[in-house]
Amino acid sequence: MVVKERTRLAREIHDGIAQLLAFLKLQTGQMQSFVAQGQFGRLEQALKANYQALSEAYLSTRQTIDDLRLTPKEGLPQWLEQITTDFQNSTGLVSRLTINPDLHNLPDEVQLQLIRITQEALSNIRKHARASQVSISAREWEGDFILEIQDDGEGFSPEDVPGISQYGLRGMRERTELIGGRFSNHEQPHQGTTIKVSLPVPIEEPQR
Image (cartoon, rainbow, N blue to C red; front, side, top):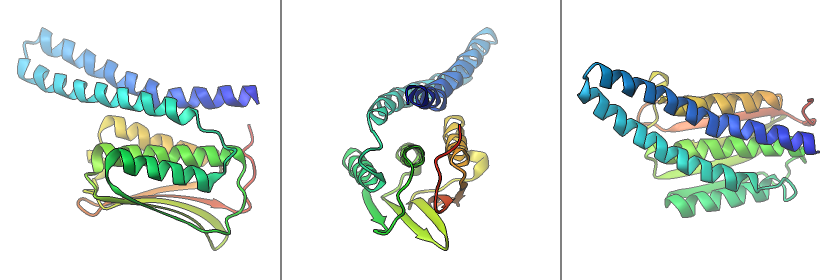
């Protein structure tokens, strides 16, 4: 259990703080180049982008610390209820949660990864979507467990995704694959975004 918890913690740091620091390092190198070349207009733009990234890094670090305090003992429905309530209280966005009452019991590791995916999806909504409402659903359909997070925001084109958000999307996909699931994100400009995770049921504990 100690080894598994250390592995989880390492993944949290890699997917969150380490990726943000890598992005900031790249940005700082670009700013040094702008100074050397006397491109002060581009330097000013880069400084603004770096400040925004630092602000997001601060918020993400605090969120990661809070997230790591969650334990899988309460069960997925209670986790989702807590996350949905916290998100609505912190953002003011209307947040709806729908949970099928007949869900199979999920292994702790699977629950944990589903929660982390939900948290990352909501983080992206908070930072980029400009949405007015969010819906989260957990259900079973035709032999699959399905988790969906939808918003009614601006959506985006894949080529327009900011660097930091690309890390988030990749992290959600990697987490889904880790528990043997399928990940998809559907988005269109000005038509919102849907994140979907599908897992065959019954779901077994992931192999290490």
